[in-house]
Amino acid sequence: MNQADVGKLDEYMKDPFLFRLYKDIASIGELRAILVDITHACNLRCTGCWFFAEHMDRYKSPTLESDFDAFIERERARGTNSVTVVGGEPSLQLKRLRKFHDAFWTVVVTNGYFKIPMSGLERMSIGISVWGDHETDIRLRGGGKKAVFAKALQNYKDDPRAIWYYTVTPGNVHEIEHVVDQCVANGNYVMFNFYGDLAGAGGQLDHRQGFADARAEIDRMIARHPAKILMTSYVNEVTTTGRLYGERWGHAVCASITPAHELNRERVRNGNFYDAHFRAYNPDLVTTRRCCIGNERDCATCFDTYAHMVWIMTKLEYHLNSKPEFTKWLTTVFLYYLGVRALDFESRVGLVPEIHRRVQAALAQ
Image (cartoon, one colour):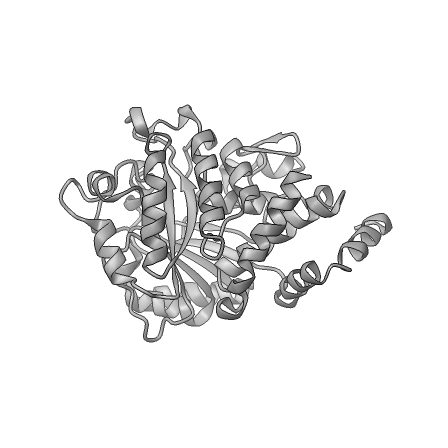
């Protein structure tokens, strides 16, 4: 950071609220994150799931606990402090989840059908997938039979760890309000992802229709539930448009890649930032993949919100040009740290309504 940028940052820090957010993030320091498929098994086969679409289940998780323990120790020695656990279905591996929880800041993404117990896992952030209202969710995730959303609501009633990861489709925008209202009434928080139609189902699921209507409806939900939505309108805009300071989202700019993977050889040479620590591990805990999602997926179909948040986070120098731009950057970083529980969630989540107010003001300028 040059002297001019230091001067700008000093000026922005005169705002007590921004100073508080910045100080909290600085007290944690760098997140050295990885993503891990904890198992190749799942109790559901959701329509278009990227894990099975890219045949990640061909990598079998280790049978010996000693192999799993050795993986944790290798990552601790490497400096890892934050883990996102996916799969497969992580709730099928509670013993190993506890080991991650005890070693790192841990986010687990679950389909919600089986409850992850509270005892011994109190500090874990639990992202619960939902793809639409009950009828839609039964059709897409429950094989037309299992009421997955209803079961998950029951499992995580008033659970402070629970954040619903609502994967929105272009054709189901009319369901957003009712789904969000149910999640909030359940005593939980909400994030949004956006569906990439890997299975080629088309119709209501076709991402090529765009997410303009969904973006507007999500902004309305932020205004409706400002204390419960953990994604700002700025992140909503960047993720759904795939645009940031003249760049277009894709493999060339995504920072959440496995740097040493052979498919990233040209990517790491193109001059764009990437997280040098990050690795995305397959269920065998030995092999890695190109990025969070897989090796073969067209990045134009990736609307992962957290990956887009990291993209924003890499652009500090651009966001320093004005206080409104800096506000958009800082609130993104803060909510990222809050979502992975690197910050004390209970004492910081009360700041979220003011974060939304600040971002709306910044976007209006």
